[in-house]
Image (cartoon, rainbow, N blue to C red; front, side, top):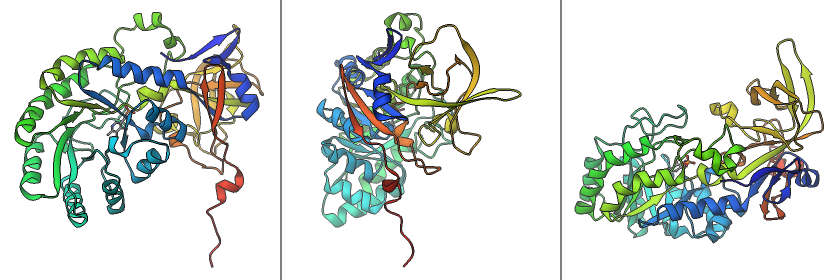
Length: 428
Ligand SMILES: *Cc1c(COP(=O)(O)O)cnc(C)c1O
C-alpha cells in the first residue's frame, strides 16, 4: 500500500501537497514516501516471520543516500552489484557485513574492497569468477564467503530485458551444472568458504507461480548442499512486481481485493513458506522494486502542447534522462495532474525535451487535458527511476525529496551546471 492520494482536489504524498514541493524545489523532482518504504519493509518481515528470513534491499533499484540510510535504520541488509554500491551503503550508514554481492563481472579492485569490508557473501556467477576470488583471497590470506547463483530455467513471464532465469541469459550457472561447480570449489579452491546458494529469476514478476516453480526445482539441490557443504543460507532473490497500471487505485485495499491474481508480499510469502520452512535454513530475500517502486512519484511540469496531424503531444520538463524505463523496456507509468481535473480527458503522448524519438513517458494515453504550467506526477517512479538517470542532453540530475508525515526534506539538491561539468578538463 502506498501513500499517494488526492485530498481536496490536490495530489498528496502522505500529508504533503505535491504542489507545495514542486513550487519550492522546481521540477523535475522525485518525491519519496518514508511511510510507504518502512511499511513495505515491515510487511516483508511480518510475512516471512515463520522463517529465519532476512531482507537485503537491492541497492540498484534506488541508491540515494537517504533511502539507503532509511533501510539501514530499519535493519535491512543490502544486495549490491558493484564496489560503488558497497561504498554507498557504507557511506549511508549501512552494515557491510549484511551485504551480498552479485554481478557477472566483478573486478579485482572490487573483490579486494569487498573482502576488506568483510561482506556477508559473494554471489558468484561463473567458475572463472570463483577462481579469481579464490586467487585474491589467497593473496590476502583470508577465506572468501561465496555462494553461486543457480539459473533454474524458469520463464518469469516478464519483459525480455529483465528476465534472468533462462539458459539464454548471461546470469548464473546452469542448474544442470551447479553440482559440478560446487564440487570443483570444494576440491580446488581452498580460499573459498561455501556459504550458500542464490537464485534470482527476473524482475517485475506479477504472478507467484514462477517463484514457486523455481523454488521447487532448486529445493533438492539446497538439501544436498546443506548435507555436503553445510551451507547456511538460500537466497531466493528479488523480482516481486508492483502495480504500474492502476497505481493510484492500488493505494486502497478494495482494489487489491478485486485483483486476487496479482502478486502481493503476502501471497508470495504464503506460497513459498511451505516449501522453504521444512529446510530450516536461513532465507535471504532481495527485493528492490517492491520496496521503493510505488513509494515515489516524479513531479514534472507541462511546458507546451503541440497538436500534430495524427497526435496531440504534451511536452514536459522531464526526459528519458530522468526516467528511462519507458524508452528502455517499454515501462509504463501512470501520469496524474497534481491539481485534479474533472471530465476533460484527451488522448495524448507525454514527451520529454530530449532529441530522441524514444523520449516519451506515455504514448496514446488517456489523460486530463493539462495545460502548460501545470504540474504532473509520474507515478511508481521510485525503482529504477533516479538510479538510472543521466545527464544526457546536458540536463543536470533532478532533485529528490523525502516526505515524512506532514514534513518533507530535500535529500538530493538539484545538480548545478557547474557540478555537471566539474570533472571535465581540457588536454594538457
Ligand atoms: C536486480 C536484482 C534484484 C532486485 O530485483 P527487483 O526486481 O528490483 O526486486 C535482486 N537480486 C539480484 C541479484 C539482482 O540483480
